[in-house]
Image (cartoon, rainbow, N blue to C red):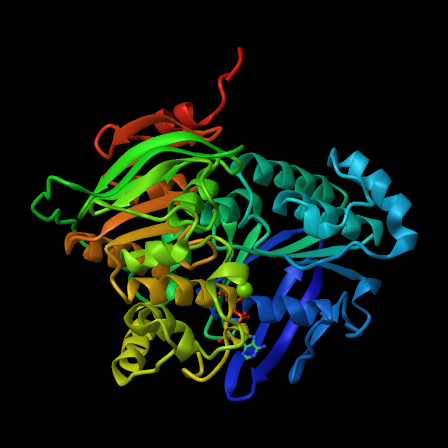
Length: 471
Ligand SMILES: Nc1ncnc2c1ncn2[C@@H]1O[C@H](COP(=O)(O)OP(=O)(O)OP(=O)(O)O)[C@@H](O)[C@H]1O
Ligand SMILES: [Mg+2]
């Protein structure tokens, strides 16, 4: 029986058509994935189910009857990355549920103090507290470690066993195939196909998503070596997360930093860039010592950082897309915000290169889908071709086509002499991209592997805490 049925659902934002008549059904008790490229309309569809947005046309049926939008909590609960647990009456039930789900969090904690993993689990608990029959999740694992994602999947399996219907959006096809009964593909606001997981292959789903053959990797050319390192980090300490780290990156080299969430990966990158002031140690760029704790010094020396948290650090939400793409270049050229013609052309070409889906250069980033925002952050720094590029989780939330594009741009710029440090918890990404992999755990380098000798098992063995004995 269809639990939830979408019938010809339309939604536009001004001239942008996010959904152009979507029809498909979700069966009672199944786990149903919704996949598609950035801007395909996935979040919009989920927001309509949740009553956050209203459809322009069409309807959603809940067990055969039109869903009363505006009272989403009757039947549905939504977990998104911005939920809050603020209904006082739910406190005690929430506490009991958190306990039942083995989530080590007090129901009185404010959500902004929780880790992304705990936010997710609290939101699922909230859905349970509402006794929801349908659970909707938008990219729930984007900020989770593998272990945390596994914990969440365990909770979702328990909900499925209770008969809860689950509709979730993800860019991570392995988890989609692991978790789902059926997979719906959206492209450009249209329903393309719904696959039975058992009968579908990853290739089929990807082809339906992108509507063409998926892009391949460009071959990697290493430039003729320069003896001096482009980036030289010595005995860097930023307590408690960075505990004495030394390494070099040569011009033209792509070095991966792999560590599980909490390993000190992000803190290391931020300390190199100067966002965090080091307690000890030094950073040199092409032989020039950076002023500690001063990002302006790093930028002047040709260092750029693509931060992990695009919402807080990566974008200027009060500026247009064009300004966002032009800003780092303008800042470097003049330290003032001067829009120049080339910069606007540069912005337009970045939008084309990364296929950023946006109605124009004038819009502010909040009008873009999550993955397209990420492309803007990456694109604006790649556009100025820095001498040293630091990237933290560069393809988080980005669709598979754009992921290849971003990798290809990094490879191309490295071939032209850019030194690149890529920190990521996405091991396949690090293995695909890096010439050399540094593994961090507890703020220290635990090993270094060349691309030739690295494989998943060897990297994971270095990254995971030893099973017994002190670390
Ligand atoms: N508030 C808004 N104002 C204007 N346009 C919007 C708004 N929200 C979404 N859009 C546009 O609607 C389209 C669909 O966006 P949506 O967020 O549903 O995509 P998505 O499939 O979730 O993508 P992603 O994988 O990047 O999260 C995009 O072109 C987006 O720019
Ligand atoms: Mg989305």
